[in-house]
Image 1 (cartoon, rainbow, N blue to C red):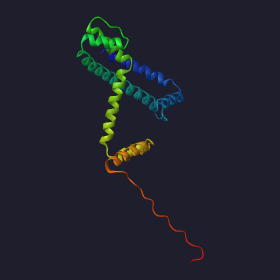
Image 2 (tube, rainbow, N blue to C red):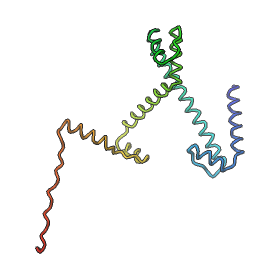
Image 3 (cartoon, helix red, strand yellow):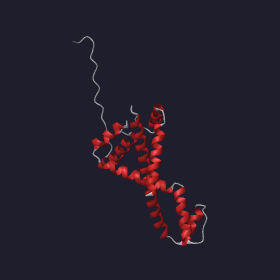
Image 4 (cartoon, rainbow, N blue to C red):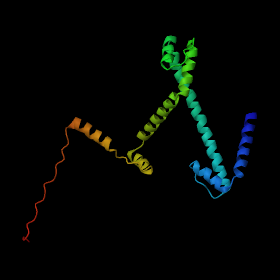
Amino acid sequence: MYAIGQEEEAAAAKKAKLKALAVEDLKQRLVSRGLEPSKKRDEMIESLLKHEADMLEKCRAYATKVDEALAKKKEELDGQTANELKEVCAAKGLKLGTAKQDRIETLLENARTDGEVDKILANAAKSARKDELIAMDAAAVLEVCQSHDIDPMVKELAVERLMAHEDEHGRVVVEEPPAKKARKAGKK
């Protein structure tokens, strides 16, 4: 209850601070966050507060994903022997520790700080987005490409597909139509 009360007080203080700003400063803050400024001061303040709340929620969700990734990594490390963990620590230039649990904690902290967990989460997000796009029909994917000004025709990909087709079915030969004969002057 105490924590909730403090959060409410902080939100009220933040709102009061935003109300004290000039309209141009509010507009600048909105634009810097990629938000559309409005003509009404209260709407701009609410938009900023909502955006901040959304960002905090995304940060909490990301922290949860980090914790899940570290738990999975810990399970993997628990399956290794103390000597294997010692070798991994030595290869990464980390303190070796004396017990298996010390080595696991060292490796987990290293995974958190060196970006390994971030890479795991980024790859998982990329894979999920790829699956989402593959599940869409072709017209919807083209619409997404057009909305982002992306050329869906990638020359290198088209060449790879042509090469794969030719490997399977033989080379595609495009014949030029015969050239037209020039008309002779004087004939009508």
